[in-house]
Length: 256
Ligand SMILES: Nc1ncnc2c1ncn2[C@@H]1O[C@H](COP(=O)(O)OP(=O)(O)OP(=O)(O)O)[C@@H](O)[C@H]1O
Image (tube, rainbow, N blue to C red):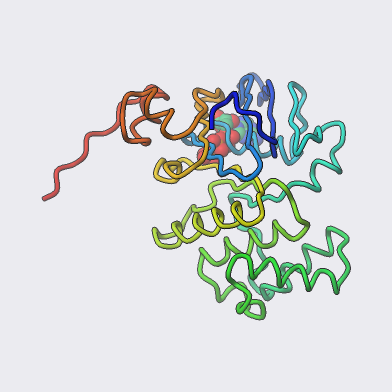
């Protein structure tokens, strides 16, 4: 898929700048996350990923440019835009002492979803992330990867068209990371939702449909992993990322 292809944008960001005092955290950022696709937002620490998520979710007000979720401007029509948005934040936000189901029902109540409907949706959402059998377990009893999947189920309760995940694999082992990626890919295939997955781990972008490279608040590149590799004249997407942000990849250590 190329930039010129006409697609339904689950998320469209155009010309967004955001500063903390005199420091620009985002500088004229434009990007898209199409429906039915996995878009990776890759950047090193401090690139501006969390700031962008805070603007999309209206934790911060965007004073420049526009942010649209399924065509709804988050500033002009926030209720419509946010109703299409599911978010998994970097820090975990589940109540460890409640059961998985209680956590989901609590969240559904905040969205004004009635008890019966909430139970039905919670079961369906847990089934989608392969955790239906853990509904009655306390969250404390789950692994880190399972907790992340509960957070995804929770984010899906109100039927969003766009799922934002901010560094969702932080603290997970390699197997759990792979499972999480597979689950999210399956959701995209089954439901056609758009996903924006923020990460600093370049191995997580190799299988993305599209990649957006963010560096020091600026979009440095957009395209498929193959397009990024072609641009940087390498076959390794991690090396392509390092080249695009102007850093030399560390030489591989020889095995002992
Ligand atoms: N509340 C704040 N006040 C001042 N500066 C901030 C604030 N939040 C972020 N910044 C600065 O904005 C820039 C972008 O930070 P941001 O957290 O968005 O990056 P990030 O890509 O999410 O990084 P990380 O992966 O470390 O979370 C950084 O220089 C950061 O120091």
